[in-house]
Image (cartoon, rainbow, N blue to C red; front, side):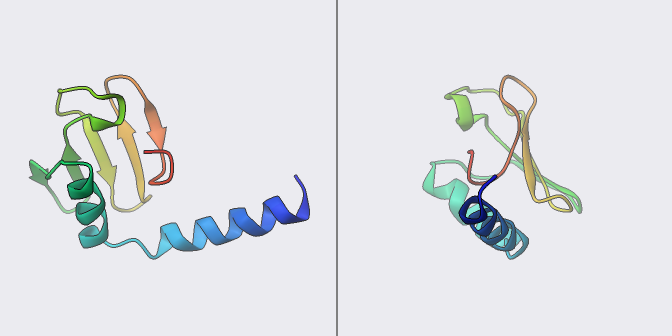
Length: 80
């Protein structure tokens, strides 16, 4: 990995660490999705990541990662 790639990776990780629950909900609203279940640790959405219609896309608040239980697997907000 080049120095330039490392620089951008660090910046991306810093951005992810600044994400709040409200920001994630706003991003998903831009995709046309609202959460259908919010717990202390998770926010659940419809699987818009692969144009699916099941309700199996979870955002984990602690790790700040999404996980699609239908098709896509683990992803960051940048991969969504």
